Length: 234
Ligand code: ADP
Ligand code: ADP
Image (cartoon, rainbow, N blue to C red; front, side, top):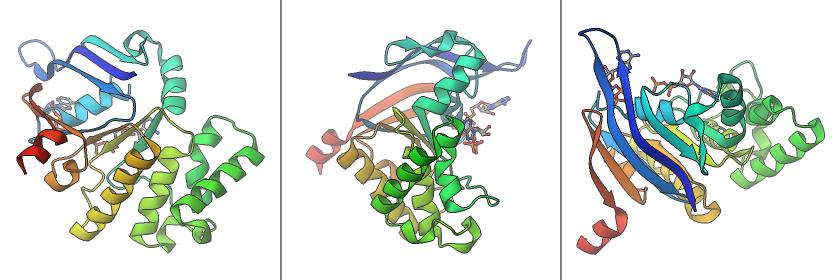
């Protein structure tokens, strides 16, 4: 089933004679359970594309549908609810809050959705068990290892069972071994739990885990490859 439909999306910055076309007629679909990477040089529009899909940024023109619902026409209040319920975010630095324990960090999306404490507690324990971080739940982000922080960020992105996981340069701050471990986790999430993942990266190694790669250039999709095509050539 079609999860995400991006249709003729444009995003301009600036005004008058000083306009940057950050996104210039972008269209693509993403099916449920797909893992798509967006690659491109710095300034090609990757972050802008992720930000308009996550509704953090508004569109200049075009439409974005999530499960046939047009999110480009929603009001900010509905959008906030949409983001909380349907999206999971993984950022480069993981954005874990140092004032919260790992348990509270993981619980955050459910807390924002005003879930019952008993439900939150059970969900966090279950998720932490799956990811092997049960023993660090009472600790704070600065007290655990990089790998444990990664898994906590993944747990937080998944805890509310979002329709779509958006990852912005998730391995950008990691060395090659940590990148490998992180991408293995993300790959498993897609393979085993059929999580739908849209990931921005400029790193070919990370992109190789995706099933499909969209290449952006000057705000346009100028190429698209499926991993199957690469496999056949290998
Ligand atoms: P990438 O993530 O691929 O590096 P961006 O999406 O950040 O690319 O940027 C795409 C283009 O839009 C660039 O030319 C950038 O300078 C411009 N841009 C991005 N954000 C803004 C902004 N807030 N104001 C003005 N121009 C912007
Ligand atoms: P950049 O790509 O420039 O490094 P980030 O990807 O870190 O920026 O963040 C993109 C935007 O998403 C930021 O403005 C951040 O505040 C916002 N953001 C982070 N987490 C959430 C969330 N859970 N819901 C909505 N917006 C978020």
